[in-house]
Length: 113
Length: 115
Image (cartoon, rainbow over all chains, first blue to last red; front, side):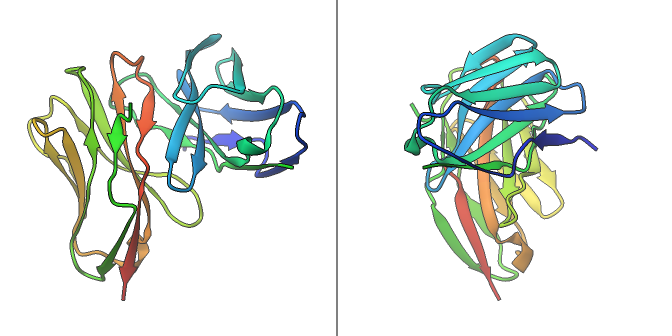
């Protein structure tokens, strides 16, 4: 079974802190994604990576950066956390190709106070 | 611009009835894929069904079918004989070749099945 693991289920951080959300997949997938999920807004794509060290901005990249130094790991970085970044963050991975389903992690509920 | 639009924030259906969840999309790419995912209250994302833009027939998976109308750019999910366990959030998503195959989602529809 494909496994996508996010490092934390719940996280509470202070405004201005640098926050790292880690995601690891164990199926050698080329593609990895970071989304945030907010009520009424669905899943919004923050960043996407299609290969090691390759990244593409999604629809809402402002305030975020990413790192993919190894194929299995995709990190989301909040350079200076703000209260409007309080959200559920979902990581996903997939093989390359239009028809390949994405597999999701369990999500990280981040609260910025 | 919103690529995927789900216009039904919530739907309420009686058990055993069929239900249709709407999804419209926007793309100029001739080659794309459409997905539906289910998210129960536990939070996990469950893949349900896939439709490719060049597929001649509508996709089906058990009680799930996809009503694909390419000219209208719609990809509605049909659930037949609904069950209480179908209560969940449902998301429509799309991948395009020109978008480096990134996967984008709609706003979701919360489906509630009443006994």
